[in-house]
Every structure is written in C-alpha cells, then in structure tokens.
Length: 81
Image (cartoon, rainbow, N blue to C red; front, side, top):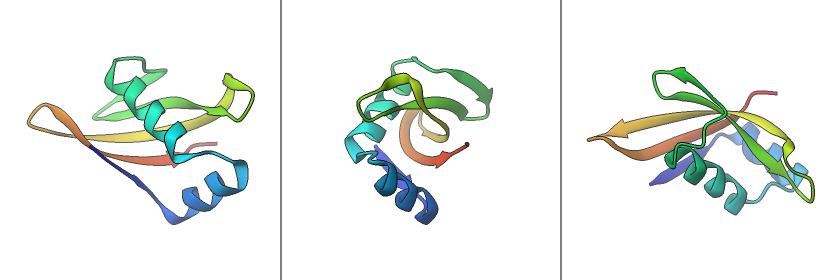
C-alpha cells in the first residue's frame, strides 16, 4: 500500500504534530472497515487522532482510496476541515 500526502497537508500535519504513523493507522482502520462515513466511489471521511487527545476530538479528513484488483493499493489523504 502507498499513502500520498499533498504539499498543503504535509505542512499542516507537521505544524499540528500529526505523525506519518498516525496517518498509516487511520488508513489501516479504513481497510478493516472502521470507516466514519462512506461517500462512495472510494471517498471516505475518517478522523485522525490529535496528539494526546484521541479520535473523538480529532481532525476530520477526506481519504481517497484507489482499488486495484480488489485490494487497497494507494491512498491520498487530504484534510477536509
């Protein structure tokens, strides 16, 4: 699996202390079916835990999942708000 971040999100994540491991964990949760909202077409909403606060007060993110041969291969993570 490959996870891609755009330039804006990379800067935001660095400023807010969001680690790459947090993003990977969020994508792994989505793979296991733990999805906050499914908008269809591989677009989902997922929360990313804030440092020392957890997911309930976490960042809302939009994740685009591209499926190749029925396996999740690539993921583009962008912050929604």
